[in-house]
Structure formats: structure tokens, C-alpha cells
View 1 (cartoon, helix red, strand yellow):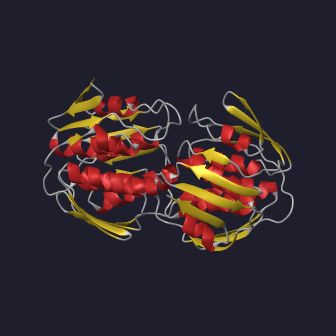
View 2 (cartoon, one colour):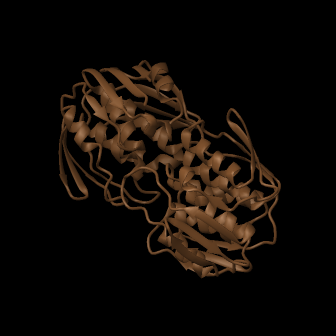
Length: 416
């Protein structure tokens, strides 16, 4: 397994270009299963999760042609509505094929998904919604099996906000008979991006970006061309890295309007954050003040930036409380940060970070995707050499991070 070797401390400076959003590209790839026509997606990130879902689409009969940042998917026929464990085990987003396959061919069998071990992420909200749409759903031997002659529109109220659940049910409802209303729907930009693609394919959807989405089912969908939005989590990671290393970084080809919660908190620490068009510039010099954060569904502070913020908080003046409200096991990076010299105390869903700490290089282990990014940020600010094991987690969501960091002046190399 690959590892990163990083020599710190370093002050990041220069410009980095953001890739397409992994979490927007995945449901868009799944949407291609809803039509026999070609769907062409641009601005796809070259990350492991995208390649995995591409293999899954091919497994069920779709033709997938990749060309750097683009892909053409044509699912003329569905050969097998079966998503096996070997493909699904590495990525929770594989469950997104449930909705389109159920709507398109009337039956689907998908292994219960895997992915990062950051806590329980049950798909019961997806399955309950499919039953409301008229599907028969059962769990057997680790697989979800669902059948429906044709789905019917219904009122679906999610008990808790679920991004993947909102996307999965929205995908299924596009071909259902009648009108579906999703209440307490996720408002994330990735949900809005999926709606944009589906509307371009002929779907009738209103309210994406609000907590109530209305989908009027249609008989068929057609092909479309679509450019995936920039990755706000990747952009946010480099923004936090700029502050953590007291650097000056221009983050290009991003969507600053998707980063409001992060920008507000960075400014509260004393960092300078400016935006112009699709460029966000983050500058920091000298001491920065601690600031509390609590994760929340969009437009709140993203859970996917919590670990990176904790790495930053180790170098801030004062005490910061970080509250994780989305996942119950998303503090696995704490032990590794403590190995590097961080002063962090855990109290259930709260982490209390007292800074500034003098971080020093160490051998650490990545436990999940965003924890990997946090360890990279800590290593950039630490004194000496840090080795980060199991960066395959990082490769699931960040396109060639070591190359982008080197362009900003970091001393980082990948070792196989």
C-alpha cells in the first residue's frame, strides 16, 4: 500500500486547481442508468471512487468510455441488475444504483455497501422510501433485493437529512407514475447538481436546494451533456491547509458560494479570505485565534471538513470545541494527531483542542478519507518527517494530492 512521506514545516503558496466534485459525480454516473441514450459527463475527478462506480456500471451492462476528465455512459440494455459485494464493499455510494435500476428494469439486487469506517450509515431511509413508492424490499444474506412493476409517486418524509437517500429516491422517482414529494430533503449543492442533470435528461423536478423537492414522473428520459460542479470539500481542504501553514494560496476553478460556513470560520480565526469569480484566496500570517465549529447539514459546516479543521485547530491560539453531529465515529484521526503532539481531549461527540501545539513528525495511520487529509495538513505544519500509511483512503476522493501540494511548495512524496 502506498504511503506519503512529508517533510515539514512548510508555507504553502501559489495556485491550485480544484477537480470536479466526487460526491456530485457519483450520483450523476448512476443517473445514466435511467436511459438507453448516451449521457456525457465533463469535469469528472480522476479518483478511485469514480473508477469503482464506472466498473459497477459496466457490471450491469452499461458501456463506459473515459477520456481524462470526461466520460460517456450508454446503458442501452441492462444485462444484470446485480451489484456484487466485491465492487460495492469499498464504497458506500454504490447504493446509488438501487434507485435507477429499480425504476428502469423493475428489480435490483445490491450488496449492502461499505466505505469509510466513520460510523453507522444505514440505508434504511432509502429502503423505507422505496417501499412508499410501491416497491417490495427485503434484506437477505447481506444483499438488498427490491422489485416493483412500476413505482408510484408518494409523499416521502425523511426522519433525518440524508444526502445519498435524497439522491437515490430522486433518481427512482423520475420514472415513477405520478408525483413524489421529498420532505426534509438534503439541500447540498451535489443534490442540486444531480437535479440539473436529470432535468437536462427530461425529468420534471422542482425545489432542489430546498428541504422539499417535487418530482413529477415521466415515461422515459433521454441522453444529455453535463459538467459536474467543482469539489467544495477539496477546495475547503486546500483553504484550511493555507491557514494551517500560514500560507497564501489561490484556489482556482472552485465555487466560493458553496463554502460560506468554512469561509466565515476561517475569517473568525483572523485569516484573510477573498473571492473573485471562481477563485478563493486564503492568506494567513502570524498567530490565529481558535474558533469552535459544529458540523451540520448544508449550509452548515461540512462533516467532511471536520478532521481538517481539527488539524488547523492544533496550531491556533486558545481552546476550540469541535462538535460532530453527523457521524458518531468520526474522531479516529484524534489518536494520530495526538501522536504528533496535539493536545486533544475527547468527550463523546465533542473534541476539545487546546493550542497552539508543537507538532512533530511521526509515523501515522490513515483511517478514512477525510482523516487522511487531516494528517496531511498536520504533517505540513509539523517539524520533521511524517509518514502517513494507507493513503489509498486519500486516493478515493483527492486527485493527485501530492502533485498539487508540491506545486504549492510542499515537500511530499508518494512511496509504494
